[in-house]
Every structure is written in C-alpha cells, then in structure tokens.
Length: 523
Image 1 (cartoon, one colour):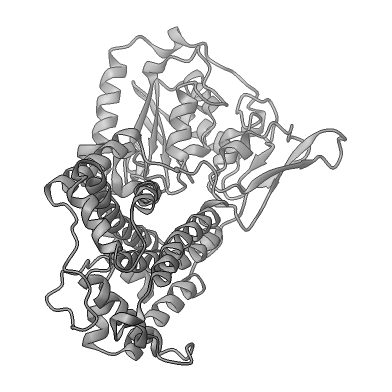
Image 2 (cartoon, rainbow, N blue to C red; image 1 turned 45 degrees about the vertical axis):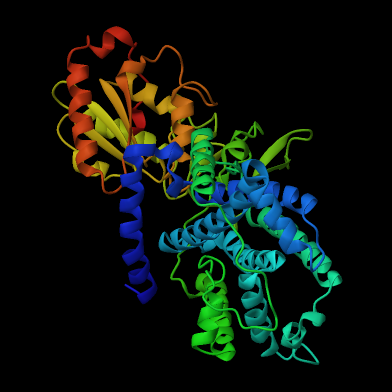
C-alpha cells in the first residue's frame, strides 16, 4: 500500500463513519456530508444575494463606508443587519464546505481518470474563494480590515510584482481615498463572477449535477444561518485608524487565518507553503496508482440510437453521433476519457434483456469486464443450483456491502460493478426462472460510487424511468437494500426478513408464469 493510499484510508474511514452516523438523522437524500458540492453552491447563492443588497445600500466613500455599514447593522437589524450576518456566516460556511468537499474527494480517491478534469478545475476555486473573502473584509474598513489589508500587502510585497511596496498605501490616512474603495467593491463583485464561471467549468463534464441540495436541507441550512445571525449578529470592530496599530482584533479564522500564520513565520514561508500545496493538488492525479478499467463498448448492429445510455450516464461520457451504416439514425459513442466503467449505460440499454433468444447476448452498449451475456449465464447457472424453499437471488454492488457472504443453498449472489448496471428485465427473468424473490444490494442512498446508480435503480424498479420494470412483476417479491461496505449485518438481517416475508406468500409460479428458453448452449 502506497503512502497516499494509507493516508487516504486514514481519513476515509472516519469520514465514512460520520456520513453513516448522519444518515440516521437526515437520510441519504438530506445528509449534508453527502451533498457538499450542492451545499457549497447553495451557500454561494446566499452570499451573492445578500451581497447584492449590501452593495446597493452602502456608501463606498472612505469616510462613509464604515458608518453606512454600521447604520444598516443597527437601524435595519431586522433586515439589513440580518443580511449582513447571513453574508458573513454563509461565507464562513462556504469555506468550511469547500474544505470538506476537497478532503472527501481526496479521501475517496476521486481525482484520477474520468474525474481528473473536475479535480484540476476545482483547485483554482480555492484561490478565488479566499481572495474574494479577504477582499470582502476590507470593505468594512474597521480594525480587522486594516489588519488584513496591511498583512495582505506585506505578503504581496514579497513577490516581485510591484515597483514600490504596496504596504505604503496603508501608512497614513491620506493614502486611502474614495477611488480605492470603489475599486475594491468592483473587485469584490468581479471575483465571485469569476468564481461562478469557474464552478461551471468544474461541473460541466458531469451530467445530472445537483446544483442545489434537497429542499429540507436548504431550509435547515437557511434556518441555522438565520438563527446564528439573530443570536450573534455580525458587527464591525472599531473604525480603522492608520495612525495606530490594531490590537486585540477578532479574526475570522475561516478566511483570515493566513494573517496570523504570516506574523508567526514569514511571507517567504507562507508563499512557499501555498505554492507547494497548490502544486501538490495539481500533481496528485499524476502521483496516483490508478488503473483504468475497461470502458463501455458500443455494438453498432444492436444500438438503435434511443439515447437512454446518454441520459443515464453520470459523467456525460456517452454522446450520440450519426450511425456509420444507417443514414438518418444515431448511434452511441463513448468518450473513453470520461467513462467511469460503471456499467450504468448497459443497465439503461433496451437490448440488455435476458429474454432475447440469442445464443450469445450482444447488447447495444456493454462492459467488457462483465458483459450482460455473462451476467445472464451466471444467473441461469446459479438458479439451476438453488435448492429448498424461499429461493432468493441477490444482485450485489461491488462498492456496497459484501453480498457474496450471503451465498447459500437457497440464496444465489451475483456481483455487479454498480447496482445501476442491472437491467430491470433481469429481475423479472430471475422470478420467471424459479426464484421466489430478488434482492438488489445497492450503495447507501446518496453515496453511490458513481453518483447515480442507487437513484436510477430505484427509479427503474419503481417504473418511473426507462427501462421500466414491467407492471406484471409483483413488487412484493423485490427488495432494494441500501448498504455500505460497513453494513454487512444490515444486509444479512434484511435478507432474513425478506425470506420470512416470502415464506408467507404463495408459490411464485402461481403469480408469475415461468419462462422457458433455449438452453442448448449450456449442455
């Protein structure tokens, strides 16, 4: 095990435990730790919305800015004061969420292969976020702003970019004028616009992006920020005075932590640290031992251009192009650099049905490492070996609980790359071929290793998304269990309860007509 892998595992395990603990209270759909990206964008909109109002009402003159911000904080505490506090606390929360998102993606190894682009485009967001946050504190022009301005310019002066030291601009009161604050406000507006553009670049190669968290999560977050704004309103420190050195200022450690670090060390140390961390973040994908898995393969003769694979692909790796042999028709084309090798596209393909009578089942799009034909053959072989009553077939996800441990005389287990690669027709096929029930073991909701596997599995079996499970298949004979790699006992108990329920039901053959197909190739 490499050092990188060992470090990631050290962080991943407690992170995963925290997520699963939060699931007990929020559920996967509303767990903030499972939706950090969407949470960050939601907080950014709160920052932008409150910032627009503050920009409209404050005066940007060097003498007026401090008083105008103080006026809306005191005289309009019920609106302007709350918005100012929301702006402050949402900014802190954004920094926290951004840091957790970065840590989580690294711990789970999500920075190589098809995730490379999202990772490298996310690194500049860190610089933009902190630059915008630091500049925002300057606008208040209190003692915190003065301390931040002097510390930042001293840090910048170490770089050979100015002909004269920039810190000279903060030596006397006369060196600061109204134009400086007007420029500062425009910069503070421009950086968030760049941040939004960079965020678009960060996610534009991902399909079905959660641009916002769930409604309950948004309401809970807004409520918490509002309560904090009322209980501990954000207020200004004493006005800036360039003739004196600020003392005992209360710093925002989420945004301004670099200033004390600079005082404790030196600008050279801080720049070396920042550049080293940035280079390391960019270099991580190249230092990883990632091995690319075989990508999805399209068979032109069996692809009808329905575009279901394109609609379901989590990473926009499938596009539609003109069919090479059928003018006027479309065919799926896989971008190998974006393919996650998850198999969700195979589960979406209408030709991935085991009821086809072909000796060798060739589908429109398939995974070389686990073709649909091999899945059908394995299912038939295991069904033939089942004995006893309440015979169950368990389709398990490689990234979830270890379904293979459930194998027994009356339980057959079949592994899949992702639960989302299971065509719903396989559930019906298993029931028609002798199974009393079918269990699908998926990752926990909101924790799919490929983002959408759990969502598409549930939607297809609920007949809400193509390809749908046929209505004649009895729902009571199907069980979906959402279990992580730490939930082996949960999956085991779920199987016991499922079998107990099946034992009270009539024989499956009375509810669903058996299906007999040619089996000569198995002889």
